[in-house]
Image 1 (spheres, rainbow, N blue to C red):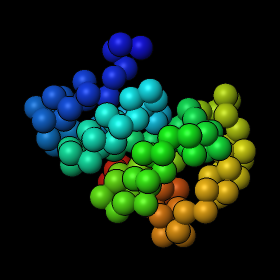
Image 2: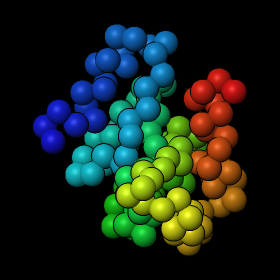
Image 3: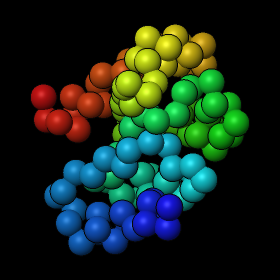
Length: 117
């Protein structure tokens, strides 16, 4: 796990500012560190794969920052299929009751922006 720390992306993002980086999975147990890197570096995004949304409520920082435009504009849905069924993930995500505009960004708009589509 020591090589999975989100802070290691910070220097790479600074050295290569035109490189778009997506950090996969909420960075537990370093979620605050991951949020900081995503917020600080314009070229770093993250996806929400690998963790079922029912567990997001235990990550208070993540739940709080999902409501912040600077952060939620850089967060994307990601599947971890076959480990997490996409239907289950989406059902639990809807149960978070985020604003529709935030859901829309996370479930598609941000990925299109990241991929240049």
